[in-house]
Length: 145
Image 1 (cartoon, rainbow, N blue to C red):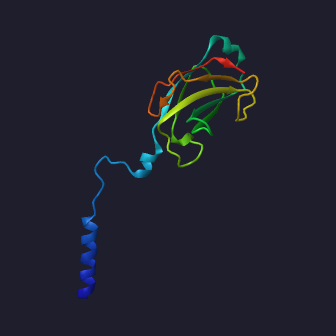
Image 2: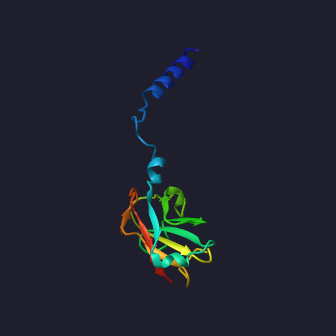
Image 3: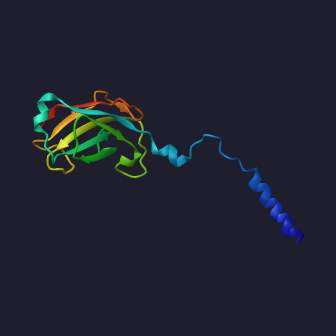
């Protein structure tokens, strides 16, 4: 019985001596999630008549060459449109949504992801590169393919 109580006392001592996280400290998983990036997407006047009710809006955050870091796909959009991208939009789960990115908005006629096709419309953020955490990453869609 004495050995059992000593074991329990030792266990209680070990548990009680562990350092607790500092107040306000974020868990490692929360830190890896990254922040958000947001702004407003507008259409250049000459593009307004080229947008149809069945078009799809893609908002794409890229880091150099290769696949996009994050993509948001939206339907039934009216312009101007306020957007926000977060870690929930990353292409590969677990990839941190952070750092410098180029943000592109594309109005896609067929709704399929991929390179721009004839009839698609596109614009790039005026802030390039933008940083995740920025809230004024505005885009004017002003290019037709």
